[in-house]
Length: 589
Image (cartoon, rainbow, N blue to C red; front, side, top):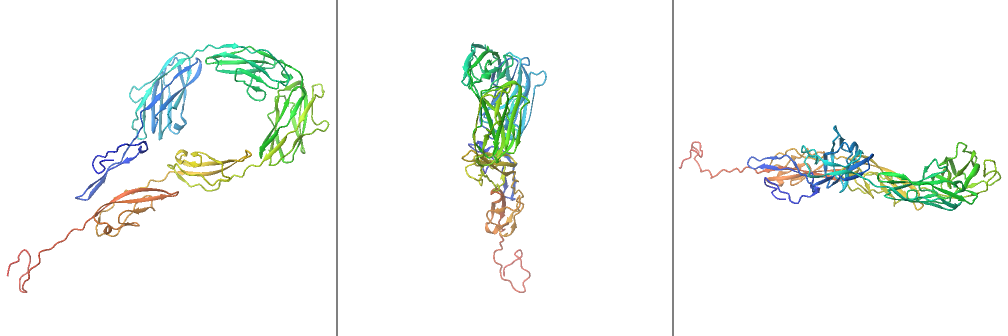
């Protein structure tokens, strides 16, 4: 820094963290002991040019498309204005989505008639900085087809501009883009083939295509009604060119499978292939082996080879520590499904006049509230308690497998220590006091164990401490923290000049009240000029807010020297009868 005591101040090697610093000049006149303070000026520090890019987008006619606006070097931006040209025969504007970091500001976008331009305006009192390559805003269009340029329009000058929070224009480069029609030929080169497998084994189908972007397998029990398949249970690879079906059942005999193959600009169904299932396996109904945490407990009941049944009657003996809440995730069967609970015996039943089959997997799930321990849940194997029958009433061969349940307690989690209020600019506040140790803190502004008030924003925030024990059981506790805006610390009133023999001059008007005055000659709130002598002295007012945040401001005071009084030379002797003597009429005797 050079020229700090001259009319021209020079600051070299400014850094980005100096953005927003203010500078003013104290001008003094020694003859009449006058001084004045200039208006404060702000320093705006920017990085290199902001780059704003419209990309080249390939799209399919008749689709909705999104065009992102990408930015680099986007730092401390408080307002954005952009206008770019579109071809209304190719694109129809439908809306926009701002980067979440910019949604606290005010924004508006539209495409006014004759719909040849898209206009965006955005402004915020809180400047925004985005990572390199971030999407500042995404525009949405209906794409009719064809090729069109996306051209930023800076006529008149200012159509495309960015400023900081004091409306200083930021240098920016605006890079045009385009939208182009994509054309890909979709050809299925491998069609699925008919497959025969034994019940209980796995079946597979293959379908492949040039230029495919997605595969979606479908299943039909009658060759007319088709259902989309998803991975899970017996299905694997439903979104690939190779579908695998495990543990096929006799009820799946004659099922058909086909694949919807999608490309960039279209889709096509494959030929259908049939599944032939041979062999026969008894129906099995099973309870799982579960280790779970106290609280809500979902117990799935699974079946395999559940084919051509007309009814079932299943009876469970419940442990007294299990509270039954109901049945959920019921396989599609029909209106004949029901249940009843008598004492600790739960009965689930279903009857149909039409044979039904249930694919291997969950037939239904039981919802309980469970406390810690090892509650029992077993099938009642007394006569007439558990059976599966055909439509004609014939009991079908079946087996019932019991499971086991272990319920672990939830950890006791506490976080009762009060959190210290933070000023809005605070970035490091260590979160502590939650037990047991080893958990994680979360919430607005939280990273690890640090709370960043500048990221959370002003207001009261609810923070969470989550602890998971060795059993995978999780407990949570919450706490609140207040992020506040601290008042400005100022001491702007002019201090009266003091004579060098002055000993008591009351220092006042530091805001907020209750701070501390310090500097040469200062004791408490009193300035003693006799201790420092003539000159101009910089005094300090500091104020400490709750939480230990101290802010300092300055003021200056002038101490003037006492005037010098002199009377010389010595007076001569005179006679008692001499007339009045003065230096102006003296005479020699």
